[in-house]
Length: 160
Ligand code: FES
Image 1 (cartoon, helix red, strand yellow):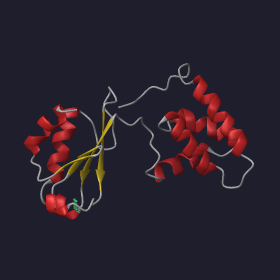
Image 2 (image 1 turned 90 degrees about the vertical axis):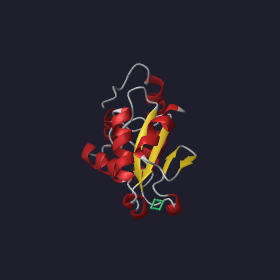
Image 3 (image 1 turned 90 degrees about the horizontal axis):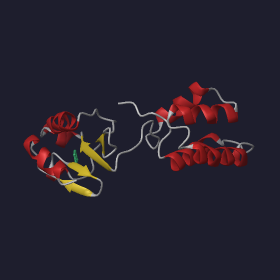
């Protein structure tokens, strides 16, 4: 799902970003700290923000895009209020975490790595979170749900 970038609403954030870029651009290796600040300011790094950084730093957009998509701490889309993480580690996978993911995708009409239109939920697949005894495991922000069945998903999501 595509989220439109609102230039008007983001005007003061863009100013803030440009200030940060100006302060940092003379320092060596300034791209990563600037991207971090950009992610902080906007909550994500849409292509419009990457273009600003590209122009101000004189770094090709493709290079910036490459960095943003390489590191998982950066996001191209806004994060939802709740992040649902479904473990795809071996123990969870064997116990059916793919079915849990499929159920969430269907229930919320999102893809893995996506955010719902109302920005309430984001869905991510995670590696083992060290709770294999509870496989398959799903987290929603700080809450952990274990020994899940696909049919439990609907009721759990309703709580949020
Ligand atoms: S494999 Fe899922 S918690 Fe370990």
